[in-house]
Every structure is written in C-alpha cells, then in structure tokens.
Image 1 (cartoon, helix red, strand yellow):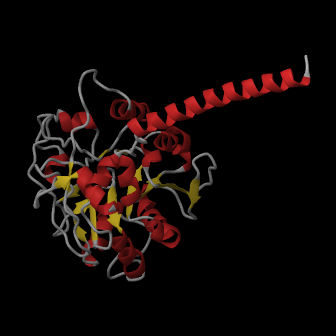
Image 2 (cartoon, one colour; image 1 turned 45 degrees about the horizontal axis):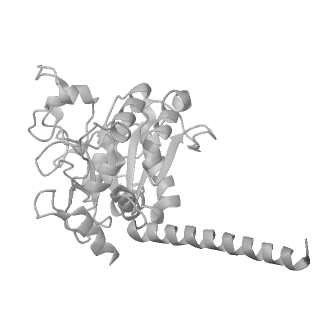
Image 3 (cartoon, rainbow, N blue to C red; image 1 turned 180 degrees about the vertical axis):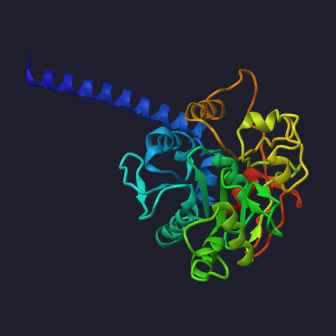
Length: 333
C-alpha cells in the first residue's frame, strides 16, 4: 500500500472517530439540558443549615452490644457523632472520660461530656443532642423541628416531665437537645457555680440538667408538633402507639402535657424513642429509610415555619408556615 493510501485511510478513520465522538458529546449535552442535575434532597439541605452534634452515653460493656448499632443506624445521620465512655474504642470511636462508670455517676459523666463538647466542638455545631445507647432518633425530623429556632436562643428540647421544677425537666432516655447558647451557659456559667448546678458526681442526670437549665434561665421548650402530638418519647414505640390501660403507670404522672398516647396521637415527625433494642434499630432504620409502599407518593411537602430571631421562643403552630422549598430557596438566594 502506498504512503498516500495509508494517509488517506488514517484520515478517514480520524474523521469517523471524530464524527462518533461529536455525536456522543452532543447527546450527553442534550440529555443534561433536558434533565438538569439532580438537586440535593431537602434533608441534605437541612443537614447543612441545622447542624446537630450527637453524643451518646455508653460504657465499655455496651460498646459492641449497643453503641456500635447506633453508629450503623441513626447515628450516621448526625453532623458529628461522639460516644462518651471511660475506655478508648477505635471502632466507634469513643471519647475517653477519666471517671468512674455506673448509674450513680451519670451526672458527673454528663457534665464531663458537655464540657468536652463545648471545648472541642462549640463552633462546629448549632445544636447538641445527648442520647443513651438505647435511644433511637430520626435526625431529619429533629432538624425540621429545630429549623425555626435560632441556636443563640437559650432553649433546650426533649420529652418534658412536670415533676420537681416549675418549668419541668427533660427525660434522659428520650434524649435532650441544647442550643448553642444553652450549652455555653451550662459550661461557662453553670458548672463553675454550685448554686446554679449541683457539684459532685452523684445525682440523676436528667433532673440535674433540668435544675441547671432553670437556674440559667434556659427555656424548657415544647417539642410537640403543631397539633399537640408528642415527638420525643421516653419509652419504646409500641408503648406510645398502644399504651396499656393503666393510668397509675409512672409515665402518666410525669408527662408535662395532658396527652393520650395512641396510634393517631404520635406525631408523624416523631424524633426519638427509648429502650430500643439493637435489632429493632435496624428494623426502624429499614422501615423509615428503605421500605416504600408501591403506588404511594412521598413528595408531599412539609411546611417549614418562619425563622425566629435570637432570643425568640414560640412553640410550633403559632405562625403561618411556608413551604420547605420556598424557605430553603430564600435562604440561598
């Protein structure tokens, strides 16, 4: 074959390849023009705007039995996840606190944990959620509830009990959420003053936090939805969905609000439950994030309430809400 023939053949192949490449590129650009890049989900957008640090109360005996399963399920949806223990565990990993384990020392552990969080993560989060290693939480619903509030407002949320203090206190098992300002007051103003927060290691952790918050003028917030349905619960779901007909049970004597827990009374934006077993955590995770009923749509927009200024506190349902997409659009425009 002559040199001219070889040159012509190469030129023809180059022309064919170029034509095919041009066609493919044109099709890709056309496809992208017809179908713009997928927008991040509303949950992903809220994760950036409402930053939640979760710290989980655990101990060495529960690292593998409970805490690991929190990490593999709901814990991974927190912006920051910490496990507070007295021993290091690289698999979780844990924050090693130099203290004695045991129920009688939970107050000291709580104080040490929040102090560690304040010293290391104060500027990296807006809200600070304390949970037990048998708590199950839906962090997306937590962000939805917190969206309206400014984290510089001295407020904390949980399942409110009415005993002991005028404004009540939050159940430890359901978990409770401190605003950034509530955390600052607790660590900076409360822990150094035994007249505000109890010194010493012993005491019921949730009661002691309640006392500190009241003395620090931190509002015990209402975590119920606009319909008055609860969202943070101190017991497992089946109890609150189908409560026993026993009004002498301790829960009814502690509940701050007059409520009848039932299948239609638990909020569809529920946030937390307690006494959840490890295998149940995976079940809940599947039902919430994976299972879909064929033929049903899940695109109904929830409404985001109007944001409040720092220092303002208004329970949900007291204002006209606006659509989620509209609110987030206004934030980014």
